[in-house]
Image 1 (cartoon, rainbow, N blue to C red):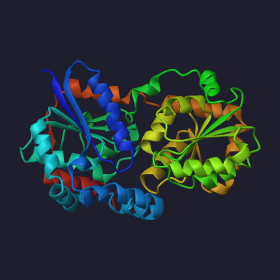
Image 2: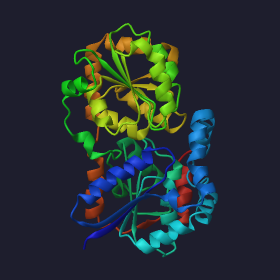
Image 3: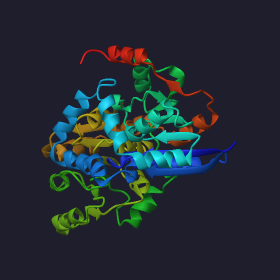
Length: 392
């Protein structure tokens, strides 16, 4: 029997949405699937709740990242915020619940913990007959991803699987798939041809500076620091949806334009990453996975305390990235890398070894072939998880 598949994300940052889109493409290409519906769960909530999840998060990233880091650590204990958080979520998601029940999926996949909690509750209370799988969109696992009733977890690293195993999640319920990225990142790209299309010199190193989808962060300051590069490098700056930033940077680089190409939002990041030599940006789970899949060494800047700092730790440990703790030294850090082609080549090889570009296909195939029943964690099992997680 062909399956109806429901994919749910939440627009708190763009990574959850992009992971869901990658999964949607892979499910739709599989003839074992009857219907696929993918949407942002926040679209079924009221404006106040929607703004709380999306706009508040973006605002805190910009103005109070240290608070986010504190909250990440304070809430990273199994079930600590579970009861209150899910009660608030359920009070504000009644239209979402009605939609899920009306769609009546065989398989549900969540790339954000909010809809996962809603679906888990529906399954636990016998209001939905479906399998819930959860795709973690960072390298590490935070306690908010835990659900009381679920079918399967998909994680980025063997270390993360080991962590879940020590908490008490059965090994057969955890697959190290990687973080799902758009299948387009597997397409071959002619570096020389793509560089020429952008008016770049094919023989000069290319740096790719990303301000993210929203164009946040100290991008102007970083561009100014890049004026101090000793190497004859070319820099692509992607400003995302921030048109004001793009205009300010265009004015800032002025007659330096041969060394800088200022771009707005791009649907061709797979080409930009594959034609570049070093990625400069924040280590979000999706952006990092995309860069790694292209064999692109990274220079990590301004990671959000919490999940992005942990992502950064893994990238550094694997020899894929360097980290610039003080933006005043950005040009110095990059010059060191450009001085050492052998080191850059080694970082590129590490990235390709670490990459899992076929994550979305792995997830889809696993779920369509798996016959395990849903799993409900008892109160005793949840208490044991809290103890296994260790002291606060």
